[in-house]
Length: 86
Image 1 (tube, rainbow, N blue to C red):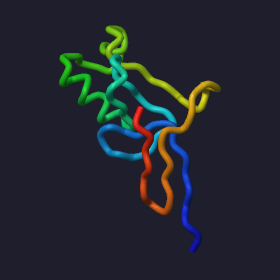
Image 2 (image 1 turned 90 degrees about the horizontal axis):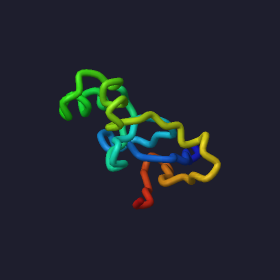
Image 3 (image 1 turned 180 degrees about the horizontal axis):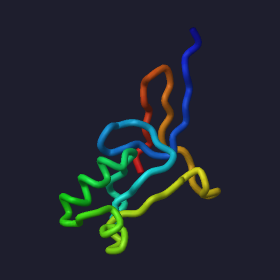
């Protein structure tokens, strides 16, 4: 079986999984692939919902594939993640 090669725009801060879209904290330090993790983080920051945190500019949603000026920050080869530090 051939080794699998994937390119990811970001890496989830919670799961360590590659992601091409998801949530990012307002200070750009934390990435969330899953809504449940983003909601938990928002709750921990004192917000009841993701929308409340979004309105306060504490979190936002992004699809990095839509940005022509962005680049991949992680490569996954044969199940192993290689990450460029941002």
